[in-house]
Image (cartoon, rainbow over all chains, first blue to last red):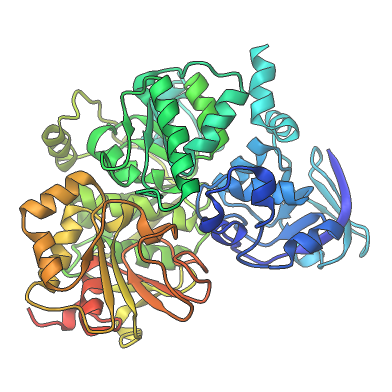
Length: 162
Length: 418
C-alpha cells in the first residue's frame, strides 16, 4: 500500500470525542458520520481533506473512547492514511479493522508541515516528505495486520471462512 | 510471569509468553453496549455470521442512551433487542434491567483469570478482581462473537506500588488522578498496569474498580490487582463461583516499577480539557461550578453514593447549582434506596437520575451550556465531552464533588465540618 498526497496536520492527544463528538454517534451510516469528522476540532476538515488526504498527527492520536465511528468518519471523509508519532491502542486496532491505513512514525510531527506533499509506504513503513526532500522510517505493522488493514476485518474474516 | 502474562499464556495454550509477543487467545466473554453493539451486529452479518459462538458469552447492555432520548437512539436499541432475541442471548440488559455496562459486568459476569473484551474503552475495569480485560471496537466485537478468539500483543507491564494508607476523605479516585497526572495521557500506552501495595490491599473491590477503570486515560491496555481475600469474599457474596485465581509468580517482572506514598496524596482534580491536567484541589479551590455530577462506571457505586450522601446529609446543594446523582446500576439504585441515600439526595435538592452513562457520555441527562462548568466523578473532561465545547468539566472524587455542590465552587472536602 502506497499513498501520495498533501498533508493535513494536527497536534498531540487528539481524542475520539473531538474526532467524532458523541452527539453524532446515533448515526450508523458511514457517509453520515463522515460529515462530522473532526467536528470537535476543525469545522473546515471536510473541505480541507479533499485537497489534503494524508493526516499527520503528534503523539497519542485517537485517545479516549473505543468508538470505531472515529476512524470510520475519517476514512469516509476521504482520509487515505494517518501517520502519527504514536497512536492510542484502541484507535490503532479500530483503524486496521475498518481498513483505514495507519503508520506509527516517530519524528513525523517535526519533519512534516501542514500542506507538504508526502508519500507513505505502509509495508516498508517509510514516509518521504517530497516538499522538504526528507525521508523517515516508521514502524511498519506486521504482515497479518497489513493484510487486515488493506481490506478490513469484515472481508478478512469472510475470506478466511471461504 | 505476572498475572496478565499468565492469563494470556493460558488463554492461548502456551506455557509462557513474553512482552511484545502476539498471541491468539480464547475469549471468555465479549460485551457491547447500545453505541458499539449496533455496528458490531452489522459487521457480524456482513461477515456472514449466523449464530454467535456462545450464547452465554455474548453480553449486550444498554447504557449510553438510556432511556432512548431520540428516535435514532430508539432505533439503535431496537437493533440490539432484535439481535438478542434472534440469537437467544440470555444476558441482554435492556432499559431498566441493568445499568452502566461495566458495573453490570462486575455484578454478574466477570470472574478472575478470564479474558474479557468489550466494545467500550473502560472495559479495563475488570482487572479489579484479577481478570484480563480490555476495550476493543465494534468490528472486533463482531469477529469475537463469531469465533470466540482474538489476537493480543502481550503488553509490557508497570507495577504501581502504593505504600501506606489513603487518608479519608482521600479516595481511590484521588490516587488514580494523581497517577495519571504523573504518567501523562500516553505515559503507559499499550501497557498493563498493576496496582499493589498496602493502600491497594486495604481498598474495597469498588475502589480497585475505580483504579483499573481509568488506566485507559494514560493509554493503558488493562489494569489489574492481584486477587486476595477481599476478592474471594466479593466473589462469594456475589455468587460468582466457581472461579480460578491467577497470582503473580515470585519472579514476575515489570518494565517499570513506581512507588507512591498513599499518605501524601491529597484530594485531586483534573482540570479541563485533559485527564492528565491534575492538581491538588487546594490549588483550584473556589473555581465556580454550575453542575455537580456523581455517577458513572468510575464512581457510581454504592460506596461512592454513601460518601456523597454523608457529605450532603442535612445540607443543601447551593442555590444556582444543580446536582445530579446517577447510580451505576439498578442494583446500586435499589440498595441506595433501601439505605435511605436517595432520600438524603432528594432532601439536599439533588436530582436522582436513572442508572445510565448520562452526561459522562455526552448523550443526554444533564448536558452543559457554553460557558458552564461541572465538577464530576466521571473519567473524561475532553472538549465537548458533556455538551457544549465551551463547557468545562473538572474530574474529582465523590467527596470533593459533593462538597463542591454545597459550596457552588470546587471545594476541598476536608474543609467541610462533619
